[in-house]
Image (spheres, protein in one colour):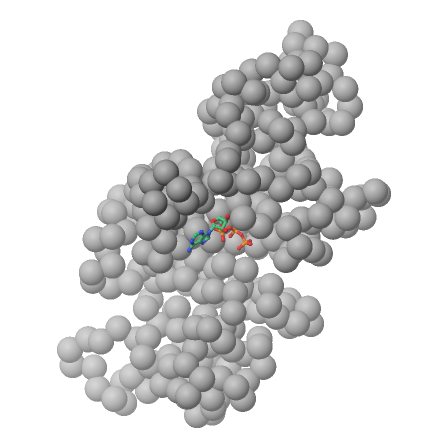
Length: 335
Ligand SMILES: Nc1ncnc2c1ncn2[C@@H]1O[C@H](COP(=O)(O)OP(=O)(O)OP(=O)(O)O)[C@@H](O)[C@H]1O
């Protein structure tokens, strides 16, 4: 089993007292061969968590393990962990042909000749549904969707066990997003890859993910099987995300305003000044309904609790199945 495990990961940017803690004790498991969708508003720390796994963000505390081994040790040899980014332009050299760009990502091995590498490039192009004759083109001669497929081919060149995909369709034309998502799903299943799939778009996450993880202000606040979490969310923040989905009256779309800091949701959280107690309490509609002074939510940081075998939520009131806010609660006795 080569699960990818984020164990109490902390990432602090800047000096100790100044700066900010973008990820603050986040724990999450991506089980081998499964897709975990990571959602949360802009600034919640999703990209930082992902980047910490591949060494692009400083791991201040905690560990990231793949199959029980610290990923920092794995980086010295082969690259079982690969990341694909939102903007394929930034990850491709505009002066390098697609073929050379993919060839460059194939790990060097003694005894592998030029012909063998060319054959590998063709195989990788086919894997992402690009014709071999595309190899001679430059990135600028491809569409955005095709460039993202090249970025995926580069990631697959390392024969990874895990692919981390960070908003890989957000910058693409809506018309090609579906094609790229279908390709990603197809490749993930065929190669039995594990995948951490970061997206603002809950509909996309639902389509692709076996499990969903919800991040708020540097922490994972809810995880579980996708259908279970979406049908029966137990963290008020997850409910807030779902309530902001298109088609719900009176709320603007969290999903359609991906770059817009989620209008329609409560006041944006400030990672420079995380509140005491539950980080979500200043925005939470549940606490004040239970206690006039927000009680425990204001003072105690909730630990992740089990809702079911695979479903966890870091809310003091997670076990309350009938907590369908904004319906007022009758008091502690009903919980
Ligand atoms: N290199 C950096 N230096 C300092 N602060 C950073 C850096 N990268 C990210 N941050 C800050 O860390 C916090 C988390 O950012 P991050 O990009 O991880 O969030 P996100 O959930 O991925 O958001 P988005 O969806 O907008 O990418 C934000 O407050 C951001 O401004």
